[in-house]
Image (cartoon, rainbow, N blue to C red; front, side, top):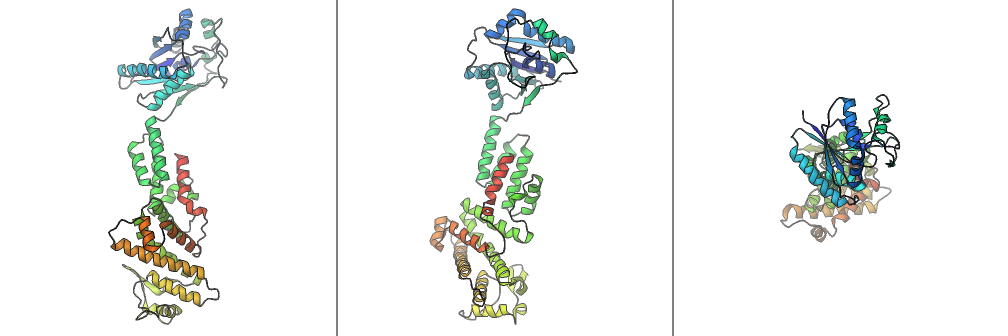
Length: 448
């Protein structure tokens, strides 16, 4: 079993406070952690106290007697050190000292550092060294017995009397005031900030790669869970995503939960992310499914026409069924809708143009015609046809400008059409719901 090594600056309340008669931080850590070796770092002022009555060695020796063990004490004396508030000095000084300690120690030895004793510059220097992470040690903070700042009194200090009156020697009343400070390393902080940036950019896959390959945090499993949830959601595997959301009490990131409606909304929300990520080619190719589904939903909710009653599902998509259509109003409306086409309505695969023509006819025969709806679906159909053909047959790079040149609308305009069409779908979606991914991102960031 390896040794335990403590590095401790000496501060004004070490070794025992004359104001509250409890251990100072240095002695309290030795009492609780029982290190084999203690390095005591003393400035000119602290060294003068040590030379006066050997108070630091004396109390460590008395504690050894009480605990029936032997602590090796190494004094690091700085008799010329008077300016004890310079952070840069202590950062470099402590770095050299700790590097030397790490060179001498065995692989299974453990290094502790006291970040409660000494001046603010000393404490900060040690904490920054811990945060950088190049010297893997355990930082220990010791709270005061009175839970407030210690007062420093040295006049008339009697080390023997202080030891005899030390209340921490009372085993029944003793309280361990040590706390290990689990500050993240600088490398980990950078990794977390990169992950947050990737989350806000909706690049969950890259965030996952960063988390899986670089993070050594105890929070790693939770972070990977949350990023996997976001990534699964974007991939439309929202059933898996919802399980994780429930685990972390994030159910409210899904504004639509009805099984019949969630797929449509999540698909459209994912389409918005493609626009924000400037994945315009994917955006263009993803339009046809959502437009087709929206049209079927509007037919069902506004006109009470269930398209699936008139077609059959095949490997190539839904196809009109002549036997199911024959003799119905839907068949008559489709025939009327294609009266201007040679051969009229021909059946086959159910395309969005069929649904548009059907809605146009239904709108003509309703008591409350809605010209705004017809304008929206006609525009969406035109956009879909132009974009789909270009994306499928043109080798040119698909950009937002390219889509606008082709259709007359950019991707933001197209998303506005889709959101307006949703208002006719019977799915209750608020303006805030469309920001669902941004809301999810902030909730994830809060948790990591």
